[in-house]
Image 1 (tube, rainbow, N blue to C red):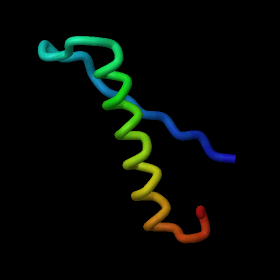
Image 2 (cartoon, rainbow, N blue to C red):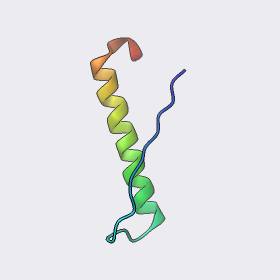
Image 3 (cartoon, rainbow, N blue to C red):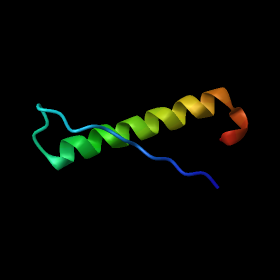
Image 4 (spheres, rainbow, N blue to C red):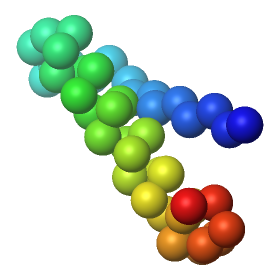
Amino acid sequence: MTISVGATDYGAGDDSFEAMYQRADGKMYENKRRKQGANPSMR
């Protein structure tokens, strides 16, 4: 079992919760892809 978490910070240019959520979600999936590329057994 693994857990994936995306995190982002709240900056002056943020206009909505949705924008922050999308950034955090994107970072989480980016990290998952990077880990899978480094460890093929995680696929």
